[in-house]
Length: 590
Image: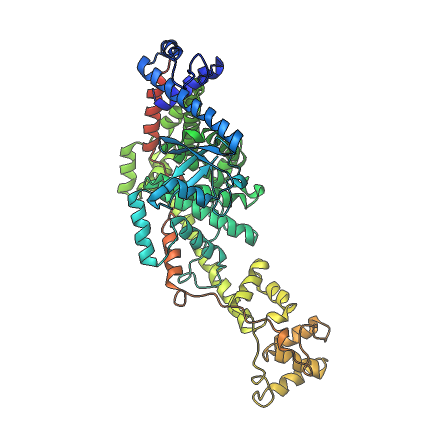
């Protein structure tokens, strides 16, 4: 039986029997173990079918910790010095400290002389933030804090990255910066040179989301993908840091959005999977809450009987891997929470699902010999319940659908760039034109009409260019406008404001009943301050700082090519956890 589970079962018995190990008859006046501890160990070892020596050692560990907590309680009551329980992997230690210090100060105390500032501190599933005191972040006396510490290899990678990119922050900061850059891009530049991300539904169709929520969602999903990439490399500590930060960003998107997509549920599974791999027993309560959130989210997105999923995708086979992992993690939480019977029930559901999802290697080989990828073969065999012919047809169907989506996307972006160029030719900066198109759902006519109400957004015009001396057609343009019934001075001012574009000037005057809006200067009283400074053009790949280019390229490497990559679990890792749980459960008393 796992040591962690033995400890949990012993503590459970102590609570049920209201045994206080830090008091007599178990602890003497000088805080040493009394004979009663040995008698208690004999009884519990027999009751739980455990080795007596191990049981006695575990009880002594629990007793010693209880005595330390008692002394810490006195210290906190008398002097206001709190005791924090710090866990790094399986190691546990106690740290006395005041709670009015900042996170940075706590990191320095923990690091000591090692000068290691790469560690992250996790409390109840949330990372302690720099610049805030422990009290402000709800750290209390006897709080349990998990330490995520970079390994020597990871520190070396960070150092090499710093040298290469002249960048001093760690990987999480790089990821955040990269996806901040990507979330600010609006698709107004050529996507071949300036990558642009778009949010799509489960069929790959773009989703219209308010700009600020779109930015938060791109950052959240980007951090999630980076975390998943680190999980694939077994780098669970940095992965957990990215996933917890993604969780914070997802919460900025609003509950309405989170309730309609399964991304947030998958994130919760990934966080708890990292807890499992890092043996974070102190995070059991947080893990339980996250799994409840994930299950509720899946039910909302897929339907009670997965009817919504069936309607959208035509099958539910691929998504079953998410439920397998959900039930497996629930079994893990139940087991280490001392509820082995609940763990057994969940494990039965896991094994049933595993039999459904197991993919015959010969069928995989058959499809791969036809030129399909391993990922395509596995996903579509699961979707088609192992039928090779149906799987091959589904792969071809999905490929055709993807090509059609790509064609539509290319056409959409081509038209968007053309519409932006049209508005730019009318005198508007690229960024202003792109924003107007986005606000009007891509309708260039509506975008132009909306911009007519904001003439101050036009590019500042050099008046020498539109003067009668330098523009031979200037008087002819004024004549055209006065022929339409507009005042001479208003026509001249409108032409100057629109850079000599007579069509734009006529629409501007018509929209304002022949009178210029207040923000447009009249010929007799020019006001330089009435013009806004030109909007800065988005930087292209050639103009951008190399660091920004590297950041974006580095982030894009972690975005999987296949949109269902998160469903492509080989189940090898799950098999190991299943075997370990079964081994632990088999050693539990009946």
